[in-house]
Image (cartoon, rainbow, N blue to C red; front, side):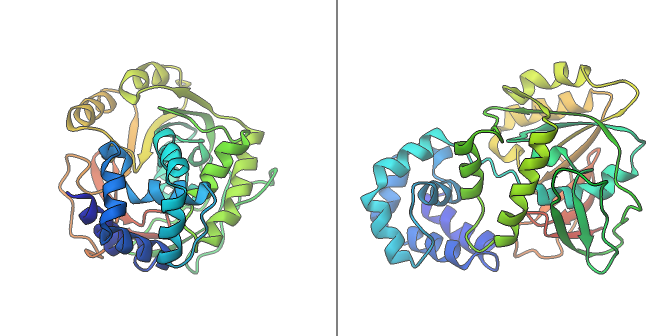
Length: 316
């Protein structure tokens, strides 16, 4: 796929209906030969729209009309390029816990959570957030240092839990973990949130405070090299749950197959929230084929479709 096609697809399947600014920027980049030439000078993995737009905003370019963005980007390209080469699209969206929660709450308790591609680890606290599923009564945890409320619109027979899961162990793996105590890492997490998504910015701060109050054990390294050893450290009296969201698309086919074999060989339950083509499963028809939805699976069995930031959940 060419860089121009990549940006057009992002505009049509991801940004449309979610970020008018990013839709305009992506369509503008896709039609701009000068900007495409700058992007094509980067490694393929560094040309993605989310990375460019987050790096631009991290570098001080505000959301606004494409012509203003273009002028600022060309003027500041060396700084933006440096950020793109140094950073990754490590969106750590706690809202995804809302689509994981029905599965986590239904497993034998207590739970030991192990997230691959954990970023700053904000998805390792599903028992610490509050949840609103449509018109259902809000689910709340015991009082803590802060509270983040996750809203999720639902369709289909979603098994809304009566109570939050009990988590006794939290761990993660990431090539480059982000530190919630580091101001630059927090600023990068903020830059990764799309311009119009004020609700996501509002819940990021309490989610970070939760992670600071109870730091998870996150190891640095490749998931295929670290998974087995880290899984062995989980308490045996707990149900080990290996989970991930929007991670496998960053692996090549060989690494992805190795990961699937490894996780299937563990004494663990496996929850994946990924693009439909990322796993060796047959994806049922999508409720919104025009949108880039994730397929939620439990032990390789499809159970639902979800929106990328956890804002919708369609149970199969």
